[in-house]
Length: 319
Image 1 (cartoon, helix red, strand yellow):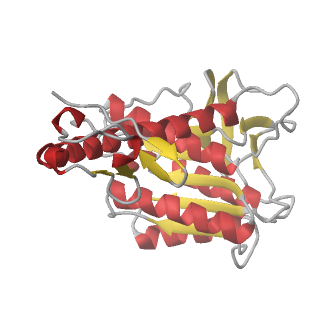
Image 2: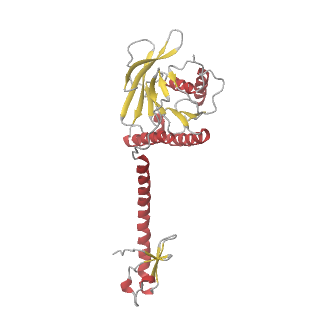
């Protein structure tokens, strides 16, 4: 049967009643049994008659302390999180500011997630490029597909792509820069092709690049991820997907920025639901803000003159 060890402190040392004091051949005193907590926790007893049991007691002591330490650390972490996130009526957050708008409608705000979903080859990557261009310095007549944004503080805009080949991605970023009317991308734009890295390594790249860019530019304006589902091993696994979304949302909160992700449907998994106009391909833009759902169903309309415009088909919960 195990014997409990309850150390007490006397001066600079810890002592306890020997768990096997009945085996002592001489009188037991409080200072006879010392407990060392530096390094491996160890019970030292002055009496030799109990040494055969002390080794087993030390193993149990170390095992119990090993179990207790992670639990104590976990409690400290959870308590700190609760303290940081507890409602404080004295600390009012700043006025909610739109980071991206679409034809005057707010579609993306700090510390929230937004997603773009549609069938393949419907212009989602072009939309991401237009959003990035909108944050760049641009002429008033720039073709931004109806998106508006700005980055007066020069904080980092991160753009990750896991769908296109490196060459195609280069041209996509180049078109975005030209769409803004620039010859060179602004120094705060950091664009990366993650195609072929695998979900785990790609996510490591996202987190490391975000950390470095935030340090370099004093914050993050927004993060664009084209191919969001490629950062998850199994999108049909609810536990993995929910954990990933929670971690992604935590990153948006930590850097006080929106994260916009593009989700590409598999071929044949989503039918076009346009209103029947030739040249219109519908896609959805949804914003996650706590438990609220905000969705806009819009389309890319390729006009006769070759210009592309965004057409709003339906909006719900966006303001």
